[in-house]
Length: 327
Image 1: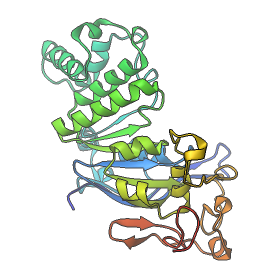
Image 2: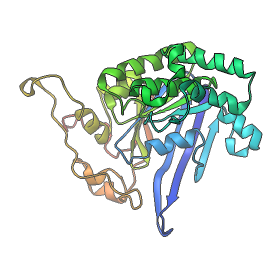
Image 3: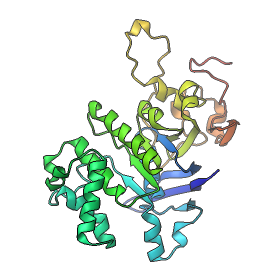
Image 4: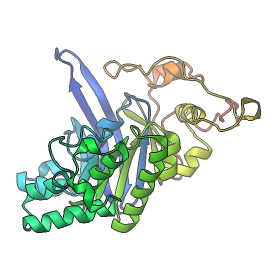
């Protein structure tokens, strides 16, 4: 496999304010991302998705484990080489408002990464900024506006344009459509797909919306309380989940049919996601799982390849269907 990103037993922990406890935000995940693919990561708030995304682009240093970007551990590089390496790995954040300086014109914000690098003349940098703005669907005139004069969808297009000036190889999309109106979300997702084909981009697409991630992703990793519980092709996971948590996420997706015409049984998760400071023993999902047995609290399930390309961490994976019946 031609891997652009490889992570092995990656952990990102934070000390609490008092220093007496540790928040296990990401607690041992392993995966590899192929060049040119869209790798989706889904889970509830608090599952560690955003922390993982920030670690991949080196905004957060892993506590333990290894991260390789193009077969290189970025933390073995010197300062200048580390900064050059990071240019190839960019992130688009959820809130398009917070990502833009309200005192800077849009053209200046898009040009800013090039200004920092000192590439070319000012006129060349301006021309490049205008070109990428037009590529994401904003005319030259938008470059003279300030952020408060743009809609949410337009601001997100500006943030996409900013990272395009650096010609990255990988883009982490952290809930990039979550703050947008539903009518705008499809346009932004289509833009990402067009840019991927044009520039050969690789995406790490983070979301809580399974409908969004299955639409855009090649493979999906399902994350719960700092760990992956399932990983596989997007279509396969959507058609037949192997982990009860994935099943519950699928069941929560809205169905555009009257209730009397729906055939699938609705799976409802009880309770909230546990604290990452003190996760449950054994299987972390057991406190909310309707199939949990004694072994689930006594032993952590192994991360195993149940069928080719399908990885899962569940003692009873493959033994239950979406309706909870044995095969």
